[in-house]
Length: 499
Image (cartoon, rainbow, N blue to C red):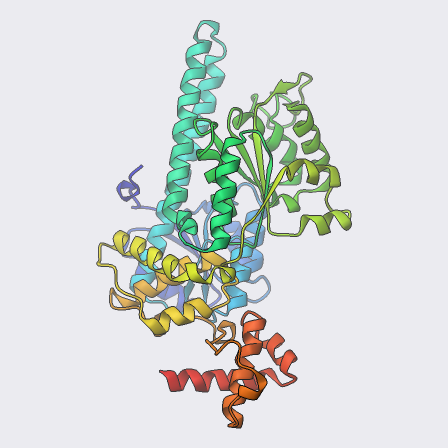
């Protein structure tokens, strides 16, 4: 699907900020793009407007009194009626912990204050295109469900209906896969041994079309990419790939969403509906963040996995399903089992083959390749030549801790390219937190080889501690028995000297 052909005129944008002057700036910029704008001065009004206005995108300030942006985003995610609306955070202090917290709350992107008009327009346009594509696919799914309901009443057309449904499901899966490739398949770019081992495991598991796989790793490492590679490289590639975010499944609707329901099962059940399992029949069901699934739902999931059949809510007959289940988690499930927060029998059922996706900080040799790859992708989208990344910037990228992993690197390179305007990308465009960079040091220096100059020896020891703690200044200071502000001051001085 050609996303550039999507018409964004009249797209609805909700602006939430407690500062009237910020809203005036945003309205002035975005009105010129022909968008339909609504504004709110606090989170409570923003939530109400989101439900009534139905925006395609929400620009949300992080720091607000009473209900801040993170809490409003969490409440948006918890409401099935508005949970699909993408949220872009606005913040004047893009501290690393705020960025990570924003992504964990469900944010799609961050825009720093003060606003740069070109960057603001480009990021808003990108998110609106993705939002419109998701809406279009949702409408197609609803239209497909209505067509299926009508055609099932005609017995002689049953075979033709099944064929059309399979074909459309395949096209939807291909569109979904294309979107994944566009935004994140570069997670497999690299030559490190850790990445090489995962690719070998993927190749093996592609041939095992029924084995359950548990994919573990930090947020942003590319767990869904692994799942998609397992599906699209297997004998199930022509079947649907159905991703499910377990942390976003509402308690009251969980059974219906997973297993389906029959007409009249509950208020609002006006027709039979297939759940995620039946939608994934013949293909793959990807259960993301499985560690957040409630215990009562875990028991029902285990029964379906063991019996390979579902009973829709309100129904009495089992329906057989042929589904490969892939699960992913960023938490330690074995620890959850010990804490009795996750069923041990379900854990063993899911972990037929475990795959551990490494954090980006353990793939240092891949970082320059990934950074250049992302710059090349975004430069192509902007219609400009791919600029180089200078050596000082590459050094910072390699030595940065990357708590947000590949996702954070991708966002950092997109912002750097926008700010550079196509010129060589240097340190000034990276906006990396200094306390997360472990500067290069001489490795293996023995105690007797330390320089007798106290300042030089102190700097080497500081860097050793930073390297051992993956750039964590607080832990490094604890190792050295000094105040962390001393490390901050020294790092700032060294960076100033190198610039």
